[in-house]
Length: 416
Image 1 (tube, rainbow, N blue to C red):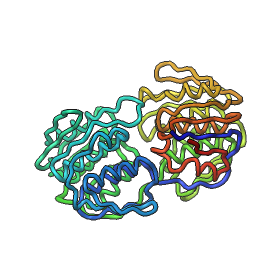
Image 2: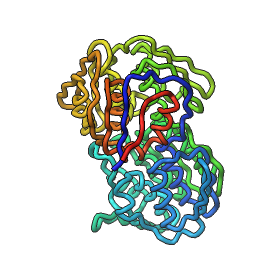
Image 3: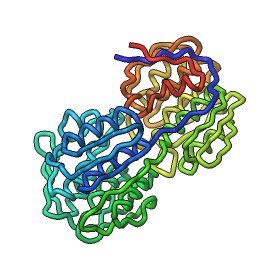
Image 4: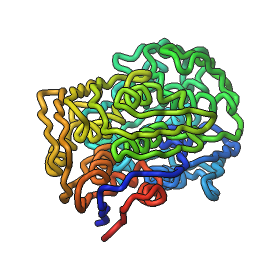
C-alpha cells in the first residue's frame, strides 16, 4: 500500500500545468462507442480512472492507440456489450457505457456501479430515462440488462440534477429516433465539453450548459478530434493549497471562467488573484480568513471542492460554517483532520470549523478522492511530518499530484 509523506511548512511557489479533466474525459471516452469511426482525444489526464476506462472499452472491443496525453479510439470492432463488476466496482463512471451501447447496438449489460463511498448516487435516473426512450430494462444478479430495437426521442425531466444521468441520456439520444428533451439537466462544464465532442461527431444538440438540453437524433455519428477541457477541480485544489501555505503560484492551461465560485471564495479568504488567458495567479500574503460554504449543483459552489476548503478553514482566522447538500457522507475527512489538531464540529450536513494557529503532523487515512486532497493540503501546512495512507483514492483523480507539488517546492514523497 502506497502512502504520501509530507513535511509541512513550505510555501508553494512557481508554475503548475493543469491536466485534462477526469470528469470530462471519462464520458467523452464512452462516446467512442457511438461510432464505428475513429475518435481522436487529446489532453487526456494520466490517472487511474482513465486507465480503467481504457481497459473497459478495450475489453468491449474498442481498439485504442495511446500516446502521451492523447489516444485514438476505434469502435468498429465492438463485440462485447458488457461492463463487468470487476471493472465497474472501482469507478462509477463505467455506468456511462450504458446509453451509448443501447443506442448503437440495441443492448447493454452493465454491473451496478461502485466508486467512492461518499453517499447514495442512484442509477434509477439513468434507467427511467432509457425506459422513457423505449428500452426494456431488467436488473438481475447485480447487472442492468437493457434492450431496444431503436431508442425513440422522449421528454425526460430529472427528479434530481444528475451529471452522469444527463451525460448518459444525452449520448443515448444522439442516435434515437426523433427529438429528446432533458429538463432539469446538469449544467456542469463537463456536460458542455461532452456535448461539444458529440456535436463534432455529427450530433444535433442545443442548450448544453443550461437546464434544458434538446437533442435531435441522427442515423449515425462519425469520427472527430476533440481536446478535453482542463480540470477545474485540480485547478481549485492547487489554488487552495497555495492559499493555505501562504504561497504564490500560477496555473497554466487553466480556465478561470468555470471557477467563479471557487475564485470568489479564495478572494474572500484574502487571496489576490490575477486571471489572464489560460493562466490563473494566486498570491496569499496573510493568514487566510475563514469562509462559509454551501455546496450545490453548478454553477454554485462545487461539492468536489468542499473538503479542500475545509482544510483551508482549519488554519484560517475566525470560524466558518460548511453546509454539504449533495452527498450525505461527504464529511468523512473531518475525523482525519481532527487528528492533525483541527477543531471541527459536525451536526447533520453542517460542519462548524474554528481555525487554529497551527496543525500538527500525524498519520491520517484517505477515505475518498477529494478527502485525500484535503489531507494533503492540511499536511502541507502542519508542523512536522504527516503520512497520508490509502492514496489510491488520490491516484484515481489527480495526475502525478506529488510530482507537481514537488515542482512548487513542497516536501512530499511517495513511500511504500
